[in-house]
Length: 177
Ligand SMILES: [Zn+2]
Ligand SMILES: [Zn+2]
Image (cartoon, rainbow, N blue to C red; front, side, top):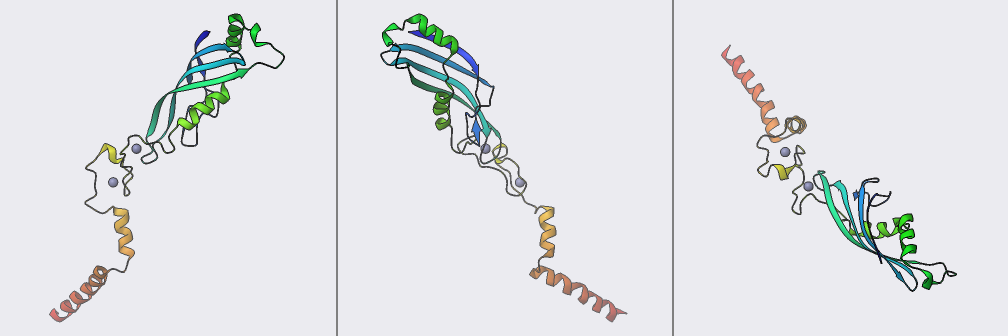
Protein backbone atom coordinates (compact mmCIF):
# COMPACT_ATOMS: atom_id res chain seq x y z
CA UNK A 1 0.00 0.00 0.00
CA UNK A 2 1.24 3.46 -0.86
CA UNK A 3 0.14 6.62 0.89
CA UNK A 4 0.06 9.79 -1.11
CA UNK A 5 -0.44 13.25 0.23
CA UNK A 6 -0.25 16.12 -2.13
CA UNK A 7 -1.72 19.41 -3.09
CA UNK A 8 -3.07 19.86 -6.59
CA UNK A 9 -4.84 22.74 -8.30
CA UNK A 10 -8.59 22.17 -8.41
CA UNK A 11 -9.90 21.12 -11.79
CA UNK A 12 -12.72 22.95 -13.51
CA UNK A 13 -16.29 22.02 -12.70
CA UNK A 14 -16.12 21.28 -8.98
CA UNK A 15 -19.27 23.10 -8.14
CA UNK A 16 -22.70 24.37 -9.01
CA UNK A 17 -23.95 27.77 -10.16
CA UNK A 18 -24.08 29.05 -6.59
CA UNK A 19 -21.08 27.52 -4.87
CA UNK A 20 -17.98 25.61 -5.82
CA UNK A 21 -14.26 25.09 -5.55
CA UNK A 22 -12.57 27.72 -7.69
CA UNK A 23 -10.59 26.25 -10.53
CA UNK A 24 -6.91 26.32 -9.65
CA UNK A 25 -7.44 26.74 -5.92
CA UNK A 26 -5.55 24.21 -3.81
CA UNK A 27 -7.00 20.77 -3.20
CA UNK A 28 -5.30 18.60 -0.66
CA UNK A 29 -5.48 14.90 -1.31
CA UNK A 30 -4.64 12.32 1.30
CA UNK A 31 -4.88 9.04 -0.54
CA UNK A 32 -4.04 5.42 -0.15
CA UNK A 33 -3.26 3.37 -3.22
CA UNK A 34 -3.87 -0.27 -2.61
CA UNK A 35 -3.31 -3.16 -4.92
CA UNK A 36 -6.37 -5.37 -5.05
CA UNK A 37 -7.35 -8.25 -7.31
CA UNK A 38 -9.11 -6.12 -9.87
CA UNK A 39 -6.74 -3.21 -9.96
CA UNK A 40 -5.81 -0.33 -7.73
CA UNK A 41 -8.12 0.86 -5.04
CA UNK A 42 -7.71 4.56 -4.36
CA UNK A 43 -9.28 5.81 -1.17
CA UNK A 44 -8.77 8.73 1.13
CA UNK A 45 -9.84 12.28 1.73
CA UNK A 46 -10.02 15.47 -0.25
CA UNK A 47 -9.75 18.81 1.52
CA UNK A 48 -10.94 21.86 -0.35
CA UNK A 49 -12.55 25.22 0.17
CA UNK A 50 -15.71 26.04 -1.69
CA UNK A 51 -16.73 29.63 -2.17
CA UNK A 52 -20.03 31.13 -3.15
CA UNK A 53 -22.61 33.65 -2.11
CA UNK A 54 -25.21 33.55 0.60
CA UNK A 55 -28.52 32.95 -1.15
CA UNK A 56 -30.25 35.48 1.11
CA UNK A 57 -27.83 38.35 1.68
CA UNK A 58 -25.21 37.80 -1.08
CA UNK A 59 -22.31 37.86 1.38
CA UNK A 60 -19.40 35.71 0.23
CA UNK A 61 -19.59 32.27 1.80
CA UNK A 62 -16.67 29.94 2.42
CA UNK A 63 -17.11 26.30 3.13
CA UNK A 64 -14.31 23.99 4.21
CA UNK A 65 -14.83 20.57 2.75
CA UNK A 66 -13.33 17.35 3.94
CA UNK A 67 -14.77 14.53 1.90
CA UNK A 68 -14.07 10.85 1.53
CA UNK A 69 -13.02 9.46 -1.81
CA UNK A 70 -12.91 5.94 -3.07
CA UNK A 71 -12.41 4.60 -6.53
CA UNK A 72 -11.25 1.38 -8.02
CA UNK A 73 -9.02 1.72 -11.03
CA UNK A 74 -9.28 -1.56 -12.84
CA UNK A 75 -6.32 -2.87 -14.75
CA UNK A 76 -6.67 -3.45 -18.43
CA UNK A 77 -7.81 -7.04 -18.98
CA UNK A 78 -4.54 -8.28 -20.32
CA UNK A 79 -2.51 -7.27 -17.31
CA UNK A 80 -2.40 -9.88 -14.59
CA UNK A 81 -3.09 -8.25 -11.25
CA UNK A 82 -0.63 -10.51 -9.51
CA UNK A 83 2.24 -8.70 -11.25
CA UNK A 84 1.54 -5.47 -9.46
CA UNK A 85 3.80 -4.48 -6.62
CA UNK A 86 4.48 -1.29 -4.73
CA UNK A 87 6.72 0.04 -7.46
CA UNK A 88 3.83 -0.06 -9.86
CA UNK A 89 1.70 1.82 -7.39
CA UNK A 90 4.35 4.47 -7.03
CA UNK A 91 4.45 4.77 -10.77
CA UNK A 92 0.72 5.24 -10.72
CA UNK A 93 1.14 7.86 -8.04
CA UNK A 94 3.64 9.66 -10.24
CA UNK A 95 1.11 9.87 -13.04
CA UNK A 96 -1.58 10.59 -10.53
CA UNK A 97 -4.50 8.76 -11.94
CA UNK A 98 -7.20 10.88 -13.48
CA UNK A 99 -9.03 11.87 -10.34
CA UNK A 100 -11.19 14.55 -11.87
CA UNK A 101 -14.41 12.55 -12.20
CA UNK A 102 -13.90 11.10 -8.73
CA UNK A 103 -13.38 14.52 -7.25
CA UNK A 104 -16.45 15.83 -8.98
CA UNK A 105 -18.54 12.94 -7.68
CA UNK A 106 -17.30 13.58 -4.17
CA UNK A 107 -17.50 17.36 -4.09
CA UNK A 108 -20.54 18.42 -6.10
CA UNK A 109 -23.17 16.39 -4.19
CA UNK A 110 -21.68 17.61 -0.89
CA UNK A 111 -22.28 21.26 -1.72
CA UNK A 112 -25.34 22.98 -0.27
CA UNK A 113 -28.19 23.51 -2.71
CA UNK A 114 -28.68 27.00 -1.34
CA UNK A 115 -25.66 28.24 0.57
CA UNK A 116 -26.25 30.65 3.46
CA UNK A 117 -23.75 32.68 5.47
CA UNK A 118 -25.45 31.48 8.66
CA UNK A 119 -28.41 29.20 9.20
CA UNK A 120 -30.71 32.00 10.31
CA UNK A 121 -29.47 34.67 7.91
CA UNK A 122 -32.26 37.27 7.85
CA UNK A 123 -31.27 38.45 4.36
CA UNK A 124 -31.37 42.01 3.13
CA UNK A 125 -33.59 44.94 4.07
CA UNK A 126 -36.29 45.11 1.43
CA UNK A 127 -36.18 48.90 1.52
CA UNK A 128 -32.52 49.78 1.45
CA UNK A 129 -30.68 46.51 0.82
CA UNK A 130 -28.74 46.64 4.10
CA UNK A 131 -27.54 43.29 5.41
CA UNK A 132 -29.82 42.63 8.37
CA UNK A 133 -27.43 40.19 10.07
CA UNK A 134 -25.01 43.11 10.57
CA UNK A 135 -27.70 45.24 12.12
CA UNK A 136 -30.49 43.28 13.82
CA UNK A 137 -32.17 46.50 15.01
CA UNK A 138 -32.35 47.81 11.48
CA UNK A 139 -35.68 49.37 10.59
CA UNK A 140 -37.05 52.42 8.85
CA UNK A 141 -39.03 55.00 10.82
CA UNK A 142 -39.14 57.48 8.02
CA UNK A 143 -40.34 56.44 4.63
CA UNK A 144 -37.62 56.31 2.02
CA UNK A 145 -37.66 59.65 0.12
CA UNK A 146 -38.01 57.77 -3.17
CA UNK A 147 -41.04 56.01 -1.79
CA UNK A 148 -42.45 59.30 -0.51
CA UNK A 149 -42.16 60.72 -4.01
CA UNK A 150 -44.14 57.78 -5.33
CA UNK A 151 -46.75 58.29 -2.66
CA UNK A 152 -47.20 61.84 -3.92
CA UNK A 153 -48.35 60.42 -7.25
CA UNK A 154 -51.05 58.32 -5.67
CA UNK A 155 -54.53 59.80 -5.28
CA UNK A 156 -54.73 59.28 -1.53
CA UNK A 157 -57.35 60.77 0.79
CA UNK A 158 -54.74 63.02 2.29
CA UNK A 159 -53.89 64.45 -1.08
CA UNK A 160 -57.50 65.37 -1.75
CA UNK A 161 -57.58 67.16 1.59
CA UNK A 162 -54.39 69.00 0.72
CA UNK A 163 -55.84 70.15 -2.53
CA UNK A 164 -58.99 71.44 -0.89
CA UNK A 165 -57.14 73.26 1.86
CA UNK A 166 -55.38 75.89 -0.29
CA UNK A 167 -58.70 76.60 -2.06
CA UNK A 168 -60.31 77.14 1.31
CA UNK A 169 -57.63 79.48 2.57
CA UNK A 170 -57.77 81.48 -0.67
CA UNK A 171 -61.50 81.95 -0.12
CA UNK A 172 -60.80 83.10 3.41
CA UNK A 173 -58.17 85.52 2.15
CA UNK A 174 -60.60 86.97 -0.40
CA UNK A 175 -63.24 87.44 2.29
CA UNK A 176 -60.74 89.31 4.43
CA UNK A 177 -59.98 91.68 1.59
ZN1 LIG B 1 -26.55 35.71 4.50
ZN1 LIG C 1 -33.15 49.27 5.38
